[in-house]
Length: 502
Image 1 (cartoon, helix red, strand yellow):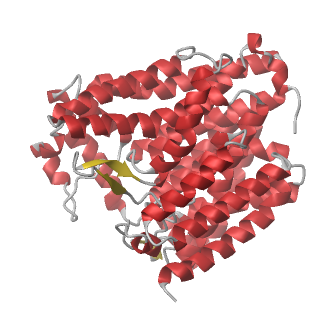
Image 2 (cartoon, one colour):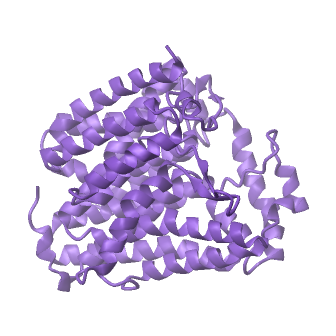
């Protein structure tokens, strides 16, 4: 049996276990009909990805399926977030049929944005009840950042290529932000969006653990079977294979699961049985651990600390968190496998310190490059002599810092707009949380705390992570959810929407 078919059997088996065990808890948050529809779409998408003879057959089948589903789906954005992680982002070019070389590259993420989000965004823009744009400071920073980078894209001198790059930014980043910020209008919308994030994170977690235990990347062979370039190589850390599942890079995998964990900080409150809540925590924690990536490990700790600090009794809860973490650290240190994991931890671990040194050196050598093109960055920063010492064995310079990447390419103006998106989100979240406290609405306040902790965590994680693959798509979606929270928590916009719990 071909490898991709053997992988399909494993993926279906693991997915079936997740859907079976998740059903009692998730149906406390969304309706049984929604759960069944999303589960069916996961199976259809997975089967189509693995069994299609080529990528264009996959695109054709899924286009028909998603158009039919979108006509009945009331919470498009939650479904979109779930489907993002169902297939890898391996890409191919849409041929230009003699007019141009090619139109643009298409991958699973961009395909979902075009088929699910673009028509829905058009509908939202025509509805009179849709909140107009620029009603939130986050709107201004997002548009400003994308406009600046669209203009800077034309510095390369090839109009067709530059226009293509500018257009793709709006499809990849603006659409998730716009649909999230304007389509979520009540508690149900937030819960569906966060459930989509959570289910995706749980599926990734289970499959990541299996990839580590069996030293087998489940989705690698499927890309080759579809006629796409294989998207990764087997990398080891501490004697374990670094998993990727559908997101190609292990650090991106850990980042995605951490964001899903932020959603669970709120959703767990809607699940009445303690055992179900505990299973969710175990699965997500195991998935983060299985990513074998320091950034997400630290990010998970920051997520909990920030969430605890925004609680009514932060000191007591923070003490409890420290005690539990210390006990877990002690137990891990008593086993050989646990000691391997401890060796990978930052500060206390000793394994692969070269990665930590690389990030520190990158900050140092990039400083003069940024100063030479301070306002708007440059297109040829890769060729700067200072950066050549950072060229790795693969012949690349890995800018493993999203803020640094923005500063090099778009200067301090771009960096101001970029950081402004996140800071603006934190400001509007604090405003929304203040309104929730005044209304004595604990449900809305809990959601605000979970979103606030998630944004802070993302801001810190991308300091050691490039904005590649699913990373920017996820944080633009998260920023859109934060914007929606602030807009619909305004006192004049009926805070009674938050009164009922599922």
